[in-house]
Image (tube, rainbow, N blue to C red):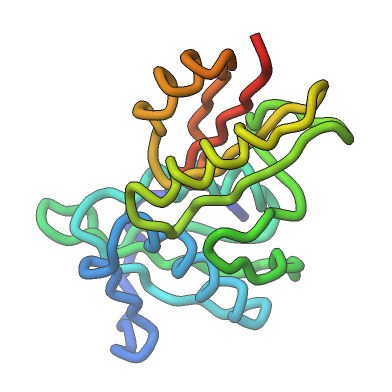
Length: 187
């Protein structure tokens, strides 16, 4: 069952080894590391997520990507700590590993649509100004009739003016995992 539920009653004893404390993980890495921990679980097993805020955006990401493959049960709801038992209830295939700067295999969610004439730059995991530099370099060499899809960890607001000056329009959308996809087309 994948229903977001309130506190279990009675609260089960939690083994310290099953607690995954994500409070010190940088924000741009947090969801990927949580999903990796979940992918690594055998079906029927769980871990307890420990966070300093309500991880409801993560819940919605699970709901969108794996609606029948997990359960989510709050064990503690604030005010300073949130504990959620996340259980894998069905087998799933994890996406292939991604290196910073690599091109993603596929997109999901509300990403702008792409076609065979779309080139991609995956700048997630890179520190500024490297994402902007890579995207602008790709725009400079973009063949006529092609579009560029750029993946970033945050909204690339510095890109928009630069792209306009180079004759490109943009469509930028947030993704459920907190990343952004920007589709750039010639004006």
